[in-house]
Amino acid sequence: MKISVIGTGYVGLVTGTCLAETGNEVVCVDVDAQKVEKMRKGEVPIYEPHLDVLFERNIKSERLTFTTSLKEGLMHGEIIFLALPTPADEDGSADLSYVLGVADQIGGLISQYKVIVDKSTVPVGTADKVKETIAMKAACDFDVVSNPEFLREGFAVNDFLKPERIIVGSSSKRAIGLMKRLYNPFVRSGNPILIMDEKSAELTKYAANSFLATKITFMNEIANYCEKVGADVDKVRIGMGTDSRIGKRFLFPGIGYGGSCFPKDVKALLNSGKKEEYNFKILDAVIRVNEHQKKILIPKIKTFFNNDIKGKTLAVWGLSFKPETDDIREAPSLDVIEELLSLGARIKAYDPEAMDNVSKKYGDKIELVNSMYDAIENSDALIICTEWSLFRTPDFNKIKSEVREKVIFDGRNLYNIKDIEKEEISYFSIGRNDVI
Ligand code: UGA
Image (cartoon, rainbow, N blue to C red):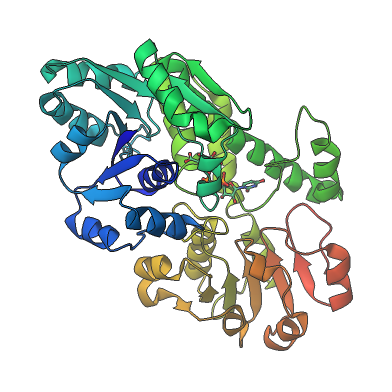
C-alpha cells in the first residue's frame, strides 16, 4: 500500500520504517530540511535498538523515502499518518497546534480519497476537530481515524512489529477496511485489531498510560512503607504479581517514572478532566507521589553524610529515564543531580547513551566521564539512577577501592541484598532491608 507519514519524530520514524518493512511504499515528510537530508543518507536521527538495520534496508530498497514537501507526501499516500508533536501547554494540556496546523493544510492539498490517521497522543475529541478542520477546505472525500501507538522506547521496533493489540477508532467502513489491510501482517499471531469509535480510541491511550503510571506509583508507595515496617518489597511484589488479576509487570519500585509519555499523558488526562469539570483525584495523587519519589534517595544520602554534602564527589550511574534510550526527558536522574548540586556536591556521571543530551543540558556544571569506573574514581559515594544491564554485575572490588565511603545508593534495586552483604558495602535501595 502507499503510505505517508507526516512528522519524523520517534513515533513517525518507527511507524514509517516498520510499515516499509512489510512491503508498503512509505514517504516520510518533515519540515526540517537538514534532518531529511541526513535521513536520505541513511542516518537515523534517534537511538532506538534495531531501527538502524530496518531503516537502512528499506531506504536501499526505496520503500522508504523522505521529503520536506507536504504536498508530495499527501499526493503519495492513500493512508496519511499524522505523527506530530503534542507538547504540554503551560497548564499541562496537550498543545494541538501542530496537528491542527497540518490538518488545515491537508484540506487544501488533497484531491482524492484519503484516510488521515491520528497517531499522536491526542485528547478526546481531536479526531472530530481534525475532521472539521480538513472539511473546511477539502474538495474530496476523506476519513479521520484515531490509531494510538503503544510503543515503548527501547523496544519500539518489536512493539510495532508484534503488537499485543491495535486500536482503530473509526466510524467509516471504508477506512476500517484499509486499516485492517495495512495492519493484518502484524497480527498473524491472533492478537486483535480492536475497532471502536474515535473518542474511545483516543481515551484508551491516556487511560493505558495513566493506569501504568498509577501501578508503578502504587508500588513505590508500598516500597516506601516496606522501609517503615521492615518488609521486603521484592517479596511483596512477587507475592502480589503472581495473582493474574494484578500481573507481574510494571510493579518494579524505584525513583519514579519519567520519559516523554507518562508524565505528559497523566497531566493531560487530569487537565482534560478538569475542562469537563471532572476531577481525577487519583491522577493528581500519582503526579504528587511521583515528584516526591524522584527525590526519595536524597534524605538517605543526607543522613549518611550527616547533612554535610558540600564538596563531596558523588558518582552517578545512569542518566536516561530508563535503559536502552538516550532520552532524558523528565528523567529522575535530573532531579537527583539538581538536588545534590544545590547541596554543594560535585557530580561525576556516566550513561551508555545519554551523555550528549546531558552535556547539552548541564554544560560543565557536572563532569561527564567515559566509563562507569571513571565515574567512581576518587568519589565519596555511588548513586544509581537507571538500570542499564551494564551496571548489574559491576566489579565490587573496584567500587570498594575507589568509592571512599564504600556506599551505594541504588534507585533501581539492581543488586541482591544477600550478595551485597558479602561485599561489605553500605547499600541503600528502595523498599528493602538496607545493608548498613
Ligand atoms: C510508555 C508505555 O509503556 C508505552 O506503552 C507507550 O506507548 C509510551 O509510553 C508512549 O506513550 O509513547 P515509555 O515511556 O517508553 O513507554 O517507557 P516505559 O517502559 O513504559 O517506562 C516508563 C517509566 O516507568 C520509566 O521511567 C521506567 O523506569 C518506569 N518504570 C517502569 C518503573 O519505575 N517501574 C516499572 O515497573 C516499569
